[in-house]
Length: 408
Ligand SMILES: *Cc1c(COP(=O)(O)O)cnc(C)c1O
Image (cartoon, rainbow, N blue to C red; front, side):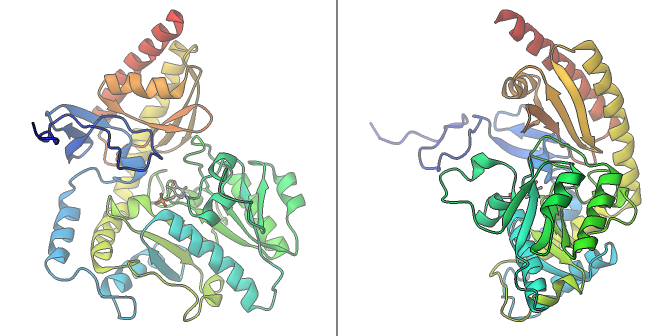
């Protein structure tokens, strides 16, 4: 008898992985577009896309070839050298946005960390050294570093990790009077997701984004958008803030879709907002390495295409219409349809975790979310036929949820 058994196709939960995720015993070995295949060849329709990461679908030929070509040349040097890929990707990002400068990171939360530091350092460099407060919103999510969880609006992510850091203030969601009351001469920045992701796909109106921009201008605070989930064409415009006129931020965090599955994030800023970030004030060993830049550039070249954004709006329109029908037919299961573009939230009457399981039984992958939501975050390349398939499977999941509720 050997102690260790031969590797089997069935995934076994590991005792050696820190238990911070509730993992499903489902392992995939291959992906193609919006399809994921398990080791035994079962196909799933992927309307989760690695939580809005695989925006161009799995195994996109352009991303694969960009990664392969770079892998055979150079993986890593250091930010003490000029990295041509950074120059190219920073140019593509600044050409397409309000921003003038970019700092590359390996993740979203690091982009948020950089944004918070950039905002505080801006005021400090201008001699306004009491301006340290970062105002975030209820239900928001900005990542898992200590600064990011302090800026986020989910108390449970702070629990057990010591006292709340000074200089972080929580505002109620979409309440301009309350926000105004919290802002003043110590406000460094307001950080907000134009469309909340993890919090349950809550979208801010164009008027609200404009009002927040004006409030920041009035008190001399910077505006930070966290477009890590809602950005890069997911809402049908390149960035979600573009739906509102005159609401561009001073600083913006992006990640997720930026690498299409390769870890990369970025903090974008205007030249003015970035002016405190001088030599030595920030850094990263891996951020902006040649592999990430090669894939990021290939991804951005696709993600900026107006045809892709038009496609997102079309598929999103179809989903919205069909999901509204589903809500009408299953009012005992579906409470509300929300979100923007292909960041879709379905607020449920029945437990969202159970609903994800019902969907999985239909070979449909969807994400969870706050406020008892599930989210649809498909690849932006999802076809209308695939969207139709997703709706059929969701209909079956609704029927299963109704049946389960009746059995209680
Ligand atoms: C995912 C996410 C983050 C954190 O990104 P990581 O890459 O997981 O660190 C931050 N903000 C938003 C809005 C996100 O969706």
